[in-house]
Length: 108
Length: 267
Image 1 (spheres, chains in turn red, green):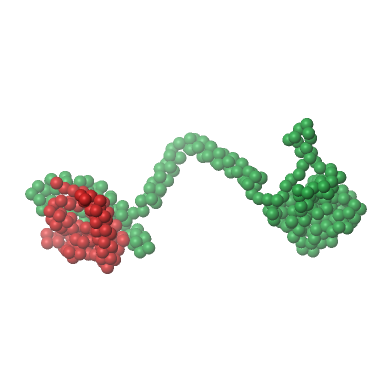
Image 2 (image 1 turned 180 degrees about the vertical axis):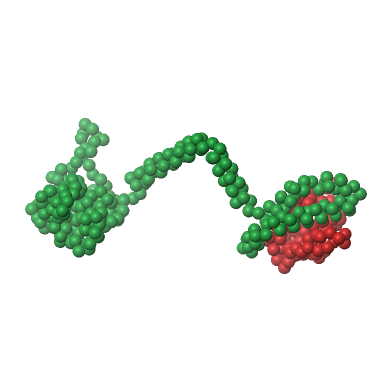
């Protein structure tokens, strides 16, 4: 069963994937997230592509065109120092929220 | 801020961005399709490519401004298509807005805005009225005004004025001016001394004293070209010679309505 990406976590997932993968294209990022989560989280292209554009605008990632193994031209994304700062901030905020939620839903 | 700059820079190469996104999405789709056994299923699952491109491009756009421009173009088309209807609507709006703002500015001046005098909240208008018709306002006679002034313990001071139209024959051409005949202490009650010159002195305020006038700002500009040397000049009003003692401050609304204030006892 597939689960929707929790709202507000997409940037964090993309940035973390780029931190692990180095330069990667959109499809590679989507594939990575899908594989790492054991097919639980499926990033829809409809949200991934616009999100990458917004991150380009915010200066969190950089993009450059490169040749793929299959002789296609694809846009490879790498994250910037600003992106790293954003990732740290988002992870901290997410874990704070998760810890809080866990305290609410845990059986006492 | 840098985001805004990047967006502005994107405006210059918007066609590049569109083409780039198109290629990126196509590549993405092909990679995904070739990774699965059924390329058609992958394509189906991918969804609407045009919509995806549109959404990705929107990140670089100015959705508010673009929506506003679209609305504006639509409005312009509708106006040219139905000119009579548009004219009716525009006229209705114009008259409606015009009428309401006219009424509001009237209410604002008359009811809301304070009079431009110091301590204006302590200024009251006093009228005589008839017992048979309490809503009526009857002018206060000079003798009665003097009684009010003498007997009142409610007011710090009381002064009155009476507005009349006089003929100014000082210049080559006669001119009708409206003037207020004012009682002693008029300027000190309003706490609005003349901007130029002085208020009437005790001598001028007395019956039979030297006829004097304090001219209004508008008359000063119109008749004397805003000459600061008008003090002591003579004015012939309805056959009588007055000496100019000063000029009202332009902020005092009196000067909007009256061309000058005369000492009352001369009238």
